[in-house]
Image (tube, rainbow, N blue to C red):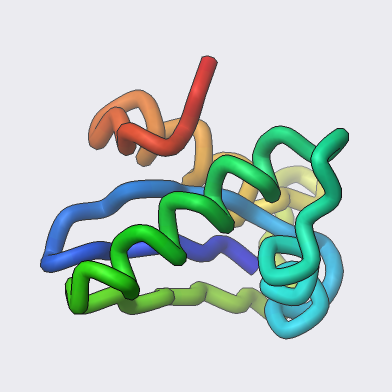
Length: 94
């Protein structure tokens, strides 16, 4: 699943997960200090919500049936890299 955090119509973070989206979001909610991405996004989301900003989460789920020449193509992984390069979301840290 490819997902994005959007705050007041601005894409703040783009990520992907092989697990369900619910499971991935729980990692952000229950972030451990050693999980820098989870902690950073948790802090950003909480700050935005406290400031009464509009926070939306968009997800793109694929059925995993994309193939090219017999090879499985992970659409979420390919799109994630391209979208991050193009949009440069501030919460995606290189």
